[in-house]
Amino acid sequence: MSLDTLFYSLLNFTFYYPLFMSIVWMTASVYYFFYREKEAETRPEHPPAHEEWPAISYLVPCHNESANVVETIQSLLGQDYPAFEIIAINDASTDNTGELLDELAIKHPELRVIHFAGNQGKAMGLRVGSLAANNEILVCLDGDALLAPHSSKWIAHHFIESARVGAVTGNPRVRNRTTLLARIQVGEFSSIIGLLKRAQRIYGRVFTVSGVVSAFRKSAVHQADYWGLDVMTEDIDISWRLQLNHWDIRYEPNALCWILMPETFKGLWRQRLRWAQGGLEVLTNHFRRLLHWKSRRMWIVAIELMVSTFWAYTMAGVFTLWLAGQFFALPAPFSAATILPGWSGLLLGTTCLAQFAVSLVIDSRYETHLGRTYYWIVWYPMVYWIIQVVTSVTALPRAVFRGKGKRAIWVSPDRGVQGDARETTEAAGG
Image (tube, rainbow, N blue to C red; front, side, top):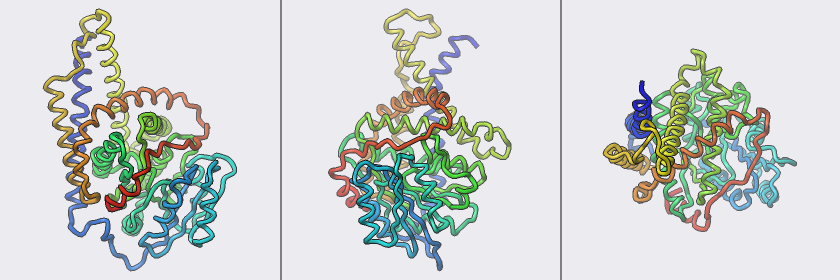
């Protein structure tokens, strides 16, 4: 193959890969919807009925969550569920999170509080919480998350239905929408994250549970050796550990949970870099196990991660060559007159809009007025593809060369502009 052919093949790959994946996600998600979601009675406010419900232990690891943790605990106390306990793990907060939790524990016997003297990280908090839990089902939430009243029954239903279920990931919904960046993320959680989880359930394996709202079978977590302490994203790590041990992970879109997301580019950059690095760390950590035939059901998820990372590097390379060509005369094989894709760009843009429309139609049953975000999500490719490319390129060397055994500890995230967060949640039906 000539250099000229190779270059143009890579250029075409940069545009046709997202087109192909968009079609795959839409097709699989529509199939998932008609196969598992379309029944009229399948609504968040109408959970399945069982004669007996197993007791639940809610685990809430916290670090500097004084602005949110009281509301989070109250959302758990208000669950439509017969038997539960709440274990809050205060991980060396430097604000008054610990004092607030202790005050709540005095008023509510369902709540127990564990205090760490030093910053141990979210994974250690979940480990300790799971060991302290009295129940087999562990529902894990971030300290700023608000669980919808009926979500616990939707989650527990999967553990009752099948003994093979090791984890259930819920449906996080963005509640802070005061900036353009936040409004774009409302659409993103439907058009990308929700769509992708539905598609991966059709594949048979899920890349990751949602770190802000997920549930686990305690015995499965124990068999998988708990959450890794030296990885950037403990949610991706435990997802791969469970599935490599042949446990099933299910997605429950009716298990709604309202969350806060970054509303600044700095906060968004840090979050997405952590996600990208965490995924690649898990891939490198478990790569040898993936080579075994018994792990073949994880191959699609792993290949998708590797190809998407290659796509990011290809995009970065094409852009670099185009930029260099504006100042220097490059050899013909490496000269790109323009990075605009022409007619293929129109096709890709149309497909993206179709993907957004499909996802918003599906998710509108879980959140009212979701269609309004369609006018904001058109900015998604411009903002997030650039971020995905840069974070993936940056994350790979960080993941490869990050020393093993280095504890991943808490860094307070960007919770966004929270002034209207509660009102937005109530208006959306959360």
